[in-house]
Length: 249
Image (cartoon, rainbow, N blue to C red; front, side, top):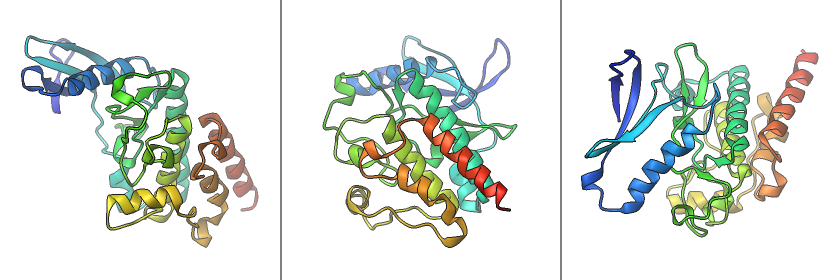
């Protein structure tokens, strides 16, 4: 990954490069091309802006926008207010709605992949292990386990087929972390952590943010069919609970 400037218009961008000559695993190259093709399909202010991609004689490259304000992981480490947490989740849901509308599942939604621009708007980034909902290629075959253990959905952990509800589960983990400053499940090993995602009860929020427990319960439901049916449903639920909260102040 390089910070670069495009000579034609002097735009600062991120340049992701792969040395084709040194790639031993053909799937690595396929994933690189796959990521570029996926990003190019999405046009949304809540998703990283794709600029171009291509190949030289030796290198493959993806050029995408540069984010000047860091990522959500950094903000959580410094503490996120409840109002900001809900606002961030709402914008994450807008991003999910955009990628799901063109048939893409992110599969690795986590704070480190939520980026902020200079105007403080956020966008979903890093589509390296994303897939199309209708995809059946070897890159995402049934039974493979991909994702980050702290944010992985139960179905991903079990190597089952992912759906848009898998991304919503990741959004639930992020919400819990923003509201409490800690992850919902913690363990000494990846295996133990994954086990909790599959089997442990949905954790309880502290009393000061208890009003958001119904949202957490839906997002972190063990069965994907028990979660919100879509990002739009999550957006509606956030709107409803926000209005209720405001009316009781």
